[in-house]
Amino acid sequence: MSDYWSDVINGTRSLVIGMNITVRELFKPVITEQYPHFVPVMTPRFRGHIELIGNEETGLPNCVVCGMCQRACPSSCITVAGEKPEGSKKKVLTKYILDFTKCSLCGSCVESCNFNAIKFSHDYNLASTRKEDYIFDLVKRLEEQS
Amino acid sequence: MTVPIQCTPDETFVLNLGPQHPATHGVLRVKLTMDGEYVVKAEPVLGYIHRMHEKMAESGTFAQFMPNTPRMDYLSALSYNQGYVMAVERAAGIEVPERAEYIRTITVELNRISSHLLWFGAFVLDLGGFTPLLYAFDDREKILDLLERITGSRLTYCYYRFGGVYNDIDDEFIAGTREFIKRLRSRLPSMYHDLVTGNIILIKRLRDIGFVTQETCRKYGATGPVLRGSGVQYDVRKNEPYSVYPELDFDIPCYPEGDSMARYMVRMDEITQSLRIIEQALDKLPEGPVNAKVPKVLKPGAGDCYCAVEAARGTFGCRLVCDGGKNPYRLKLRSPTFSNLSLFGEVAEGMILADALAFMGSLDLVIPCIDR
Ligand code: SF4
Ligand code: SF4
Image (cartoon, rainbow over all chains, first blue to last red; front, side, top):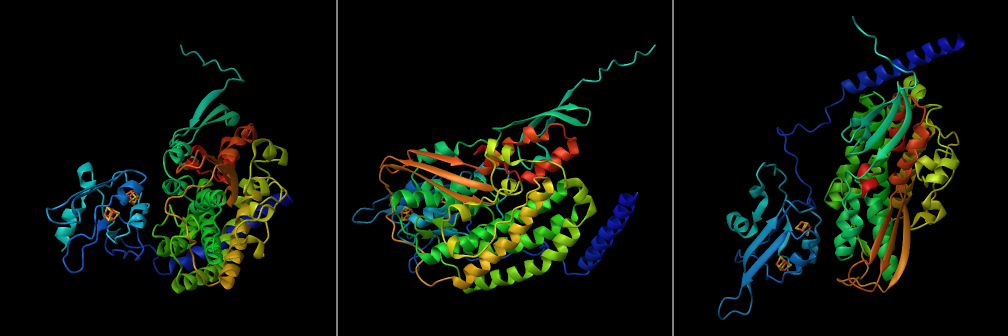
């Protein structure tokens, strides 16, 4: 019988404590972010999908088509291709395709690049139902950006 | 005329728990043989999320396996990251600068707190209490924001590199961490202990239920809070110290009861201890580089080494065999959750179904960590 009454007392105590905290929290400001009414700003180090960096003067990609990023990627998402225009020593980037369906946003590609040619974008609104939406042509993207 | 259904008293039936069940928190299937409400036999069925991590390690370079490690246990990703990085560093004989070790300790302990907070919320949710989950997530969100600022991701962090860390921490992170320590310290007594730990329903659901003896732990190799909740004071951070843990002052919480309540208390106390560790590490944080000079293509000499770390769920071990090439020859990953789950079948026998689920919650299972 004494067990019963101690349970009742403890139960009432738990209830009062619980209600106390609930009421206190009720008058605190809302902590959730009201997406999509408010759009969060990504931090500078946020790792989105990669994109090409354009040369500051010419706007052309910094990439020299060395293929390091392609070899570094653990999931083989990157395809680069380039050609040597006649009379020029350097290769020019013609194709940079990122297959984002396989990308794990690990950043190996960015770290392996020695020419400051790729960076993480801050895009995160990428939901889609079609696979083609995730095959990014980064050369085209850079042209559109500039 | 209706014929009454013939029912023998010892008749049992099979109940499938999962693979899609909210209480298993992932794709775990448990085949339960039930006698009414009582569990006669519990048989975990694994393999629904097997991804061949060990094989993937063999087919890529050392660095290419790095992004896999956080995907094993997505809740305490940094511990796994650290375990693998340490194994490779040991194999290749790389010295890590002191500042990097301190940064690793700070971030990995933050990650441990966030993992325990999520477990706390989900566990109480399993028992039927919804509100504490939201309070725990409020605090956890702060950790995620802090870690996102420096690592670039919110859950599957891949922040450590062979010989250091990806990039240095800044003053804003240090200030934010100090503020978070203050905040969680002030909230722990009321929001967590008064509201949940002292709650009569929680006590009645957890106390004297789900006994795990030391013998059972030894038999199945259980580690982490499960082992410490059975009264064995074993923690890799103290028993085989690594990184800068020997220089920091902290206790290993340990409860001898062995019931679900003991495991609950161990984790709650670990949050307090982790806060202590972070505070000391921030005070002692030395200046200096955060990366050692490491060749771009790593080729450790032939050999065999093992490295263990204390992850949020127990001992995570990496055994790395190298043959002098660019790829690991063999990488064996010892995950704590697999051993912790293994004892479920034995202990759950004879429990009421609702208690068995509460017991399962107290083991803190993360399914991708079981299957790897
Ligand atoms: S982030 Fe990682 S997975 Fe994605 S493209 Fe770069 S290297 Fe490949
Ligand atoms: S992006 Fe960088 S690493 Fe990749 S091909 Fe271009 S220059 Fe080489």
